[in-house]
Image (cartoon, rainbow, N blue to C red; front, side, top):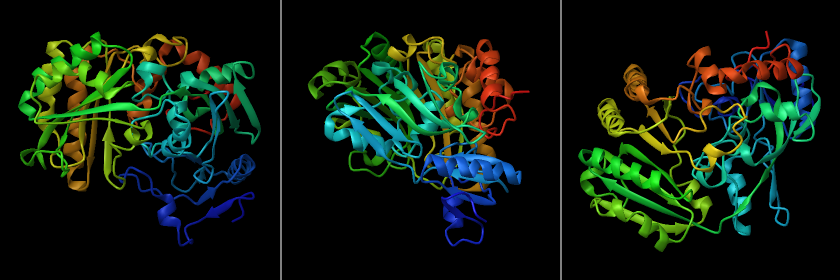
Length: 446
């Protein structure tokens, strides 16, 4: 099968099984062809070919979609991984990123210049899908969401045309790309504003799980009264076999509090003094390059995944108790994580008109189940849903769609905001009236 001018992989190719695999091992789909694109022209040719042949189209950047939206059974995958270049303009404080680049490509390109872009919380995430969904990470309390720093996008449409979206060109499309995901085309390059940040301080503090309520209350109070420079998360996990982890926590349920601080180690230590006063079982406080922080908590590929989230309008003591109580069904030992992320700050104050109704929530509960044995599927999925149920009384009802799988049309509307829906549909009808790009949290033009 000939697909444009890029490399193509079909089920008879030796590399097919490797090329079709995605981050979530629960997803086992078999595309008819994988078009490994090296340019926007390749992307356009692949789209035209798929449409001529009546093939469903999936778009793959990092392959992290927990719902498996970056692949398809019997269709064509537009694989952007060969398009991973990053071009830094130090003088202008901007960076141009190709559509298949990961956070690691971006972070490592900026690091020599003492510059950072707002990224996620692991290095293997694809920049494109992350940003088009809004993009939240360790720096959004300081610099806003990833999409707040987006200056322009080059996009191949459902007709195979290359268009540019910015504040001055296709401005309604540009608005929709701030949270609307992959509904409107294939992003072949994105240009961002970047920021000077030579280093960041990471504070990792570990406790026995029984200390959870006291520690979480102190962490909540610290972040809510602290500066935008402070962020992080409280994470219940299985204690890893690392040198800094006490023997009694290895392989057992552990509470890890990560405070990230855009400042020196001395300033960070002063800030976290209330947490240090609670006698953590272990502590690691270190100033390091942002790119190193970004890969510190990388999740291993090849595991079964089921994620969800609730964005919390507040986190009172009753919510603390509900959150800590819900940890009881968590899979331990496993790579599962029971997470409370700090949000708000600059991300909550910027650009309220974008289709991101979740951005104002100061806290995010994110149950993140990861496991290996299919026999644990029901238990892992049940636990994830139980966490959502436990904290729902404090939920805003909105949700960051990059944090969830396929949870139905109501959750999609909650991700975009009902008040944004008609406007998103209008943009969809202009750029993809036949819903060619439907393997996403879909805005149906009909």
